[in-house]
Length: 209
Image (cartoon, rainbow, N blue to C red; front, side):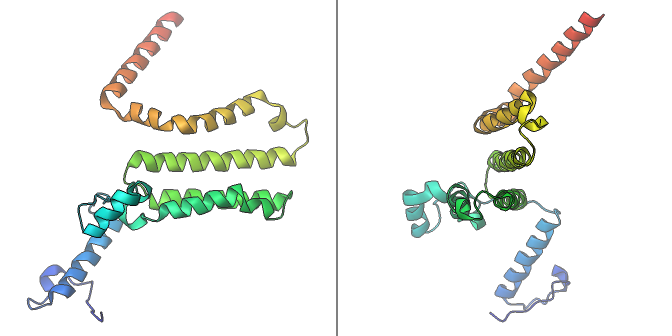
């Protein structure tokens, strides 16, 4: 709107007759700077359907699609659908049966992992951690597939049962991750787990003696 303000000024330096709109812009910009510098912490804002009638109607109709995301990333599910479409369909037609096709897939997976780590789109932290974990497992699994395809059939990666078991365990762990996260972040369960671990260590120590 053509408003300008010197952001190097402190709040005390501003004129008393500054327009409300200019003051609002100043406060918002300062809050963003302090948030980026981690000087202050603002909790993630979620959709609640308690605002306008349009928001309440959208929540009632399609809220399940975007309500789990932070306000500024409400369209993240569209990005996720495009990413899945790319890996399930589009990638098949890009340089088929070549190492370049695998390399492109690996590059896109790593970009997806970087995006997940950087923006953390969900309002719930455990959902963000699950997104990062699942993206990491996908990238690691594709990297394993690339290495297997590049070595001979008698190579270590192709024949080692331990490597197979590791990657199978990682992929199986993805759907069970929420349960593991809840267990390790629930204070009572975590206390009992730590206590049980200490007792197990003491038991093994006594066995050695």
